[in-house]
Image (cartoon, rainbow, N blue to C red):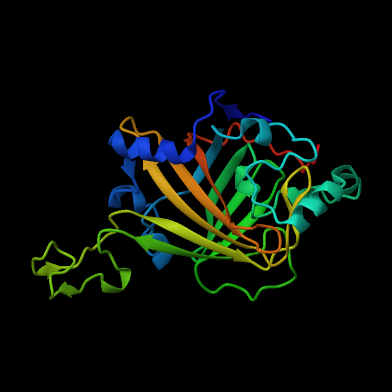
Length: 279
């Protein structure tokens, strides 16, 4: 698989802070955000950021744990409960691989940490689709008209929403801002286009799996919350940073939080589908 990494360890949260300090654009201007054709759904037309395209994971932290399958007992960074530690010590990833269950380590709580590429596109007007070449997984993020949760799965049931900055509210497009609260204290029209924002996703209805390929567990009752932010460098290079929070009291003493960087690629020529593997 084609992967791009930095040998130097660099915390993603630091990357985001440095980006803001260096004057990089967090979020998107209306021109960048409004990529959907006229007549698209409200979720497309008023997307505050454009996440569509092919993106590559830039591994700047936990390289030795993400690029190489860690040995049993490598639990660093995980606030595990005693029961989770016991389960991880007893886990047999090789047996799970042989049983065809390797994708349990490519589930929603951890798939965005997997080195490789993601491809994001609108499945329909209400649904963003994320595909991964690592493990060949597909996630569907539903803004509206979501189907009822079905059988538990490793990608679970994901509900999405846009969060806007700058006082924008798509329900008020075309309305006057009588109070002037969203126009710098001046009366006038409310903001007519997004001035930036982020994507929030909540995933439930999961099938139990691994948080790490060496057997660290998550339960079927885990709840995954993700925040996607867009960063644009002065030269036009675009990144998104996804902050992932895994809430699973059965296995985690406190929530497990990570931030992961992806850089946009010009095309999908480096897309390299590979099967799930626990090795």
